[in-house]
Image (cartoon, rainbow, N blue to C red; front, side, top):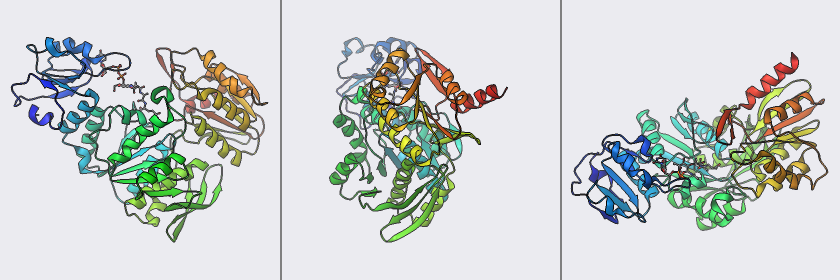
Length: 486
Ligand SMILES: CC(=O)N[C@H]1[C@@H](OP(=O)(O)OP(=O)(O)OC[C@H]2O[C@@H](n3ccc(=O)[nH]c3=O)[C@H](O)[C@@H]2O)O[C@H](CO)[C@@H](O)[C@@H]1O[C@H](C)C(=O)N[C@@H](C)C(=O)N[C@H](CCC(=O)O)C(=O)O
């Protein structure tokens, strides 16, 4: 692509470029990916600074270096074409969108944000759109999908270059609508700048990621960016932060279980493996049987339905789309159900997620509620005692274990959880090795136990120090049950 076209819309503080007609073959934001004829965009990161790799990028054949405003360009003046810009993360998004021809302008793009429910809501929206004949792309935590083809996901929301490339692939495969999770990190770090959002959907906001955003107000401000970028907005007004968005954008389509929004659910009935409810929009209603259990699934279904309503879809199509979805990986997924006990895995890893999960368990469990969970290392520490207290209040027996301790000592993380757990009188054990903890739960299961393995859901790994080991709870439960039989 011609350099002049690549840099359209970029704010240029300084440059030494003479020839804007030259061709740039591709873009890299990691020096290791630079090849002959590439542009290298330097990002000052949390671990290292991309500007330190300029020489490496030049050696690998970079033709253009994009640097941030703090960088002293004197040593690049006679060496290589460069552009100094005010924010290289934003620059990466702009030039990537230019390079791939702004694919998101050519399909319907729906962004879903919020602390909980993003993944499930995107799956439900995909199912509704698929039901009405659309070829849908999906981008999110669990996996990326082009129609039914699955692609592994590394991030909830990919880096801007990877995102635009994925959009481009989707467009090539005739996708006409894309539904994606939009994390607050991605909004703060400009990963979705240059995306053309038709609808922004807000699920809720509860305490999470304060290690990154510091305050709830900053966290909310990051989320709000999506709604500034979107043409239409869909908002949960049972959530106080959702009500703020709806007051800023009064034309939002609202949904609610309790506060009379545009789209509401009534007569909700919860079962172990499904939910039933009436879905209302204005004076019309349909009855829906949702194969995804849990009270939170009702909210996710409302978010997806309100999104479909904002696109002018009718209730019958919405019902068919919701009912066509049979499961969402790692979301209240029943991995074992025998005549003695039931085992469910769920991704809940925030205080609010855990509370909602246990409220659902409370509705459906016949016997003891056994909860196994841990908290991630190098992430929000404040939530640990809170989750401990919720666990103690909501479960009959708690197994405290590890969940991606990363560089932290697993025992120290568990001690933080115990501060909250010990405020309650619940019976508990501590078993730091997650495999052994699950084995304990299964080995000691009593008649009618409802065993909940929280935190990992669809994830198939465990991050310990600098190692990532394979750990898929579906497999783990199966293997342990085999082992116990033998
Ligand atoms: C906090 C955060 O989001 N960090 C992201 C950020 O890393 P960073 O800026 O710190 O990068 P860095 O490692 O310091 O490197 C700086 C630059 O030097 C470059 N580099 C580095 C080494 C080298 O040899 N050559 C080179 O050029 C790197 O490519 C990078 O451009 O930019 C990287 C490149 O895009 C991301 O991979 C990285 O995500 C990390 C792995 C991460 O864990 N992010 C999580 C927190 C995240 O984003 N999560 C949200 C979901 C949250 C949720 O809702 O649960 C998500 O959307 O996934």
